Length: 345
Length: 121
Image (cartoon, rainbow over the protein chains, first blue to last red):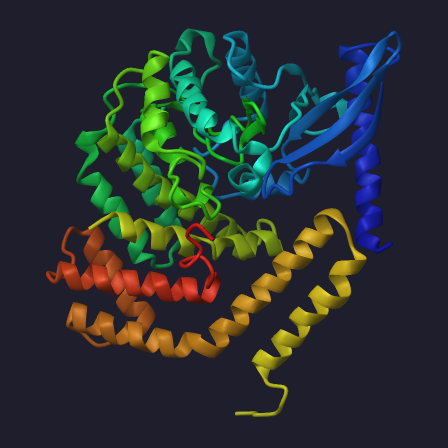
């Protein structure tokens, strides 16, 4: 075993102890935590799955989502402004969505500082597939795919109808300021990317197409953040970019080519057609979908994902967090720049 | 200029093969994922080392024509961004788009050559 692996085993045991402290307070004084393992190879947040054991109840699977324990990453990220809500806010947002009947993992509790596990929360584990590549290809999901498209439309319509009074305080990002946020990020890199600069300018000239409504926006509703079973959609994950803004952003983001996993001819997440998505949205009371506005947000999505990729790379270069993963992901911006320039003129 | 063999590209390729063939089978989980990411990063570096100068040279010539001025690639690229932001892009809009599309395709050829031809693979 390598030194790095040994250190991470110690860290995992410290985290297990921290979670156990929390479940003994929140669930049962004699509860225990076993089988803790890292779920995602996520580039920023960590998710861990574990088994909760308690007397007089069957064991159950839970998931911890938390910020990286390295405080320096969170504090030193000079490019993260305005991009993400705190874990506590994300937990309360998910709980509000769950209370309104949306398919979201149920919140169990929020970690406290004295638990020693960092900033995070614990939720139910929802079994199913999250890997986009499998969802668009595997025979197991053949029947699920057309249904999934319609369900995404329905779910988004209901999500956008959540009353703001029921939600925790969220940042407001109308279309103009949202574009400006990404223009400022791009400027902060101080490295020329004419494609993204041109694309943002192109969108700025067309801002009149969007912003007719302000509502809750999930912000990262895409293939890869959906838990899917053979029967269809089971849960929507990753609410950390939740904000108030133009809800049609979520429909455009779901159509960005990066989430089609090679199934480019099916624009909705690589599993469906736009007409099915819009039909689901309208059937659940979302109102008539303006396809030009959705196209605006799909184009914005190419730029947004490209700049998010670059942000990892420039954080690596700035020494915020030296990581081969963060360095490599920046070069994926070439993919979205290429896609972007196919969509605009 | 030293010209010993294996040269820079050949060394990078040797390290990549070492990572994939000897390290990857010995490790698991996140470390295994990162070994593959590292090997892929070396593949990008090797392609860029080999093809980057020619692609950059061609892009510099296109930029110089579009902007009607001489200069190094980075300086011309910054000037292009400045003009787009100022609302004064090069008047040859079709030429500008053709240049940006070609540049994006070239970047992709270095970063992920399978991407552009991966539609419905």
